[in-house]
Length: 597
Image (tube, rainbow, N blue to C red; front, side, top):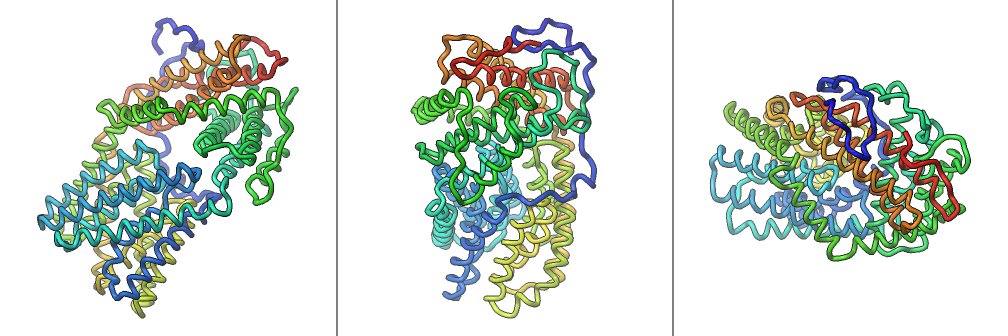
């Protein structure tokens, strides 16, 4: 760290030499380790089965199974948006369906106008890069750009005529509209389901933090910067970060859920309790019992009434602030600000640009390598390379191992089920539906496990257009997987994301500003309660973004040294400020000086 003076409001840091940049986590064991299943794995799994079954069976009854690829493009939209409240999910899924149709339209028009493999690969790589950037910028979430790239790349290499395109796009839009209905159907029986799950996660994370907080956030003594592997030596910082992220996600979900209802009011009170538990965990006055938080989480996640805890100090002011913030977010100026922020994420200085170049280069290289070797379906290699293009080299390495292992095991599964799928067209449809469900059920455990089910499903889709030699399909898929993984990882190595460190600097500055604002409003007795709570939530959001930016940069290589000591100090100071402002909530609350070191 330089010896220049620290700006006002920035936490003081013990002067230590900068840690050199390093790529973390290039370990096969960590990449292939299984995780517990997601608490909502069954929702996308069931949604995609229902959304696919109706169009597939309808086309089968009409004697046109060859059109399944176009209806599947719309049905796969049911995989998106399951963590969003229904009001926002409706808008997000509409955008997903339109984006899927737009990418498919470009592919179909290109395929109808040219048969040049070189041109088709170039268009496929360009589409993959655009889809990657748009999904990252809008943060549409898993499965992100991979499904878009799979559909558009496959359509590029399917025979097509211009007069067929309107009908094929109509199939996609029709299936997409049905998928939209399927994804929103649970709102009829459980309107606040996504909000309840988000709040339950926040309560569970806060319970973990309250049970094992590590060093107290409010301690005035500064023991110096935490070690680089602080989360391994002491789970306290890791628990606080996880709790901060979960509470921030719960507030975002509630703010985007629409008008307040009695259930949402109770959920907001629970988030206030979770926030109080994570910003000032540990024993002391006002401490929240971890077992009580877990009990509230279980009741919130269930189908019964939402628990209504006793009001914490300042709860009424907090809820008033939430209402004010919700109203402000609906204002026209707030929508303009949101659009401007999206454009900045897509602008020339965006940290997403290196990832887009990485995706373009990797997909093009993979496609041209396969075409040079005479592989008839280079789009498989394009999709493999696109899936490997992640935010940093560590994630790309992990995905390369996961994708390769999953696909190689998947072709063995395909060889075993191929005779069953050829019994009848109905058997083929049932096999595809089964593997679609299995993929979503397994992929939350680890990407490679989900790929074991995705691979046979992708190969079986080709059977709707006619039988193919099994040996040819298996050989092509193995070769495409190996070449696509090699090209994707080579692109991730050569095209470095040197802007990741710049994102950390910007996140640090934003955290400094948010911390200073929280200190000012928290110390000002004349500040409105809504302003205090809004500044505290802004600080929480900045800490979440700071940790995400730091983790992304830590997994990249060949970049300038990261200000890790300043990052850790900013996090610790931010959490101390959160603790101090939380203690000052309420009309009679008193606390030590905010931001005391």
